[in-house]
Amino acid sequence: MTESRDQGAFRDPEAELLSDDGNLALLIRLLKLGSFINTPMKEGVCEPHDIAQTELKVVMALAGEGALAGHDLVNIMGMAPMNVSRAIAGLRERGLIESVEDRDNRRRKPVRLSAAGEEFYKTFGPELQKLSDEVLGTLSARERASLTRMVDKVNAAMAGWITSHHQDVKLGR
Image 1 (spheres, rainbow, N blue to C red):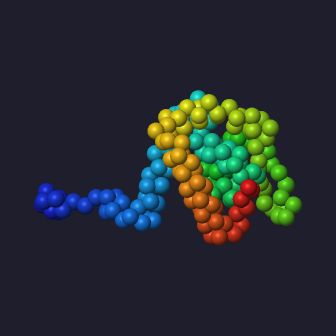
Image 2 (tube, rainbow, N blue to C red):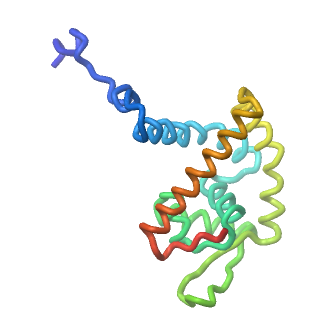
Image 3 (cartoon, rainbow, N blue to C red):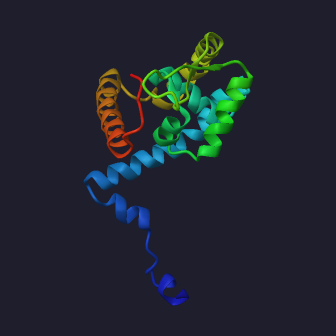
């Protein structure tokens, strides 16, 4: 085994996947982007606002999608149910979310941002602006417009995948 590594036989699995020009290479790049954004969001947004990353993700999901139940958040964000439950409990304790009634399914327990939660969400603006300038500032206006269209298209495809694989998930908007 050591001999083959010394002779250059060691393989780089990521490089092999990225050598594909198709969807697989792009998916790997998106996954890497999703991983890389966590540290700047944690340091640039979560820490100044004293909010856990999981809680921030729930706040942003509720701000973007409207009322969602815990299992919706689990399926949308791909997080462990216990982590989502803890985030909901922490946000509820801080008065940032509130329960709403689902008239179609009384067992479903959706939550939404409270008025205080909406105001709290708005306070992220300066940090999000600074972070977006640092991360996306090298893009031209044309590149940003193009990337926006592509991201919207990919997000729509992901939402479609989630709802087709998890029929009980209700996306708000």
